[in-house]
Length: 633
Ligand code: WT7
Image (cartoon, rainbow, N blue to C red; front, side):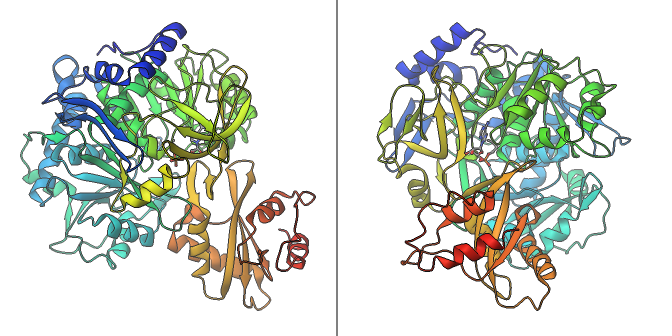
């Protein structure tokens, strides 16, 4: 594969960006021409941000799995597509060539068909990081089914909510998943979820951990058994460019997660374009993205982007700190990884172990490092640069979101300059703008505001599943005529963008997005809780921690046990990833006379910034603030 659309110099970047703004349709038509379309589009773009209604490559027909697989067979069938490192360092690693991946995807696509899956059906995927997870995604894409991957850290209740929202009648899972020393009983969790989801017709279960599981006759089938019955050839379904490819649930400022919908055509073009340009991928490079496929990063940069580009990806089942904090570096040396894409939270947790786990590792194969998910603090940036990149690997700080489908603002490795803690410049095709509270665009440099995008890009969110109005009000009404990201941002004197964090009630805990309202709802379901308020506070490892103020009836003198009980409830309702780090029992919450909780004050107290609480005289009962300050945990 060669990438004619890869920009290779700062000058070429500047030209591409300018061209993409002057004539976006010509720009993206040129990029899209390097993909396989069964039928060419009639029109590159139709859009308005009022409805919103965005269509890219209108009338074009394609299948993304053909772009990921079939087209590489002739020239690169024997090339590795996925190299898999198991959780257990002594376990057997697997290399799957493009030809093998193609065969396995076709075969599993037939399994889906044999089990009744049809184009447009929603298929929920709940698996660990095994190659079959990528196969499941690609097989869904091949038959035109809409996949919805749910991260392994979500509870049965969260799964049931998502299954109901998506009306998913099919599930692909495994008996269990390994994550470090832990074993997650995936099928058991699914069974609990299914008690509330009688509409689910089939559950396909991969045998992996050999954890004993219940298998209900007529509903549950084994992946391996079904494969034996399936044919090897599977013609890819002809998809419209605007047909949905997948749904991915993400948290917002209300209690209910929303299903972000991405399309087949535009998503494919942008995931691939951004992959090739940001990381400056060269044929033969080994790309290691440490994200879980349960998040958008795994969708775009483990599966679709790299495979469309004919790249070799490394997929890792385990976690960075097991069996010890040298695991990433063992893997980098073992396979000679060239590009490592990870998260600030992983970097900070490894930093805490010092440099000893790095000693004895060569890491000389590394060429490019990447960061995603939250602002990377300068200390972590320099540690990563010095100890892992040995000062010779460009670090790309990639800002984007589930809704954007691909990287939006980032330096391009070795092509445009990095600046620690800055995502730096927009990719070609991306037109960011900063707005003030009144919605006026803030022009010029050395300014701060809310980050919006004023023109569509190919992988923009198309809708929130089953509720288009929610998509409109969440992203397109705050600043009419633009897409609002929910992030605050500073633009420095040179025009570099620095993301300062969410400006809505969304937390970023270890790179996981969690809504405060969602956590409050879960806490409020706990017996004895009268009401609660959840805010974020700075956390050394997680970036943000979760601080919950809880008004509770009577803890019978055992606050600690009650705290543990509440954590159990949150785990059950959302999942272990949403457990508060701190719970403070309070007599009341600071409210205005109209009953609104003053979160600003609670945030300050959680941060330990007692001096700057601002005006508290408008509160219904200013005394509650004094009580809360005294009882801070
Ligand atoms: C939010 C999106 C993008 C995949 C992983 C997270 C924050 C993301 C950066 C970055 C500063 C970042 C933003 C954004 N974020 N990347 N490089 N620098 N902040 O996807 O769960 O949709 O979360 O993550 O606040 O809005 P997500």
